Amino acid sequence: MNIAVLLSGGVDSSVVVHLLCEQGYRPSLFYIKIGKDDTDYMDCSAEEDVEMASAIARRYGLPLEVVDLHREYWDNVAAYAINKIKYGLTPNPDVMCNKLIKFGCFEQQVGKEFDFTATGHYATTLLRDGKTWLGTALDPVKDQTDFLAQIDYLQVSKLMFPLGGLMKQEVRDVALKAGLPSAKRRDSQGICFLGKIDYNDFVRRFLGEREGDIVESETGKKLGRHRGYWFHTIGQRKGLGLSGGPWFVVRKDVDENVIYVSRGYDTELQYGKEFGMRDFHFITDNPWKDVQGEADVTFKIRHTPEFINGRLRREADGYRIVSAEKLQGIAPGQFGVVYDAASRFCIGSGEIYI
Image (cartoon, rainbow, N blue to C red; front, side):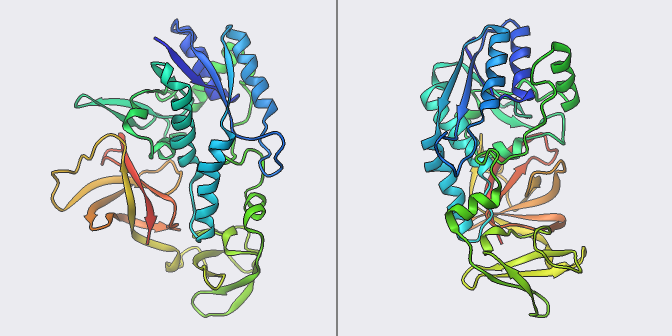
């Protein structure tokens, strides 16, 4: 079997290489480069990552190729993120990077020559009714199916996730026991396209700063100033510079450049129980084709270990989720990710609107 491995230089993808070699495979290794060395707005040349990936390749005597997808990345993912932010929405570049770059452009340019592409994502694939579905990982804390919820059937049917049945600590243990050079590297916390650059610095480069008021939603009282609504997201608590909190962002007026906040952990304004999803994307199939009325599902509105119970219903312009519990900080522009009622497999996702 001909396998390509996307190698990041981190412990997860390194363990993927180790496990495949233990099973007798000789995969080809690829490092996707999305930063450009001469651009100061994308400080993610990541020499250390390439060095680590090269060390893994040497260790197992495997070929490593650096695939430069900087231009495709900028045209697709970074431009998408800036455009959403400009309209007051909260984008998810990680989701689009997986869909368009890691399993999009890479597949078109390189992956098409291979039977499978293996990655260090915490996810699984399941066969149901003769079709491949995106399954959740054993480790709920590390599960990354929400970041994969926009991939399509051709993509999921060619993917291998060797870590999906392991807990994170088991992966670390494998790396330590095998003496992998990446065994003690910290997990990357950076957003896919930002590398090591600060999120606000990135946004400032393209949208600048524009001062506006921070207003208490209940009273209309001006509490402070901000440097542009695009630096803030619904549900945000930190970085507002207000005393006497906690304060949460509950609304943004894009036209007037005003941020509305509400005080206290239990303020009703930061909670909601339902949301719509536009442009809903089914990864494999629509399991509700024959369902009349509502369907029981679980879902996520951000990257958390918890799957939330809810009911899904069809609407004229998409789908709506009614949650079984109150939801804090429903952020338009993020993806609502929908799973079956038992949270075994990911059905798809759509962009949240209120």
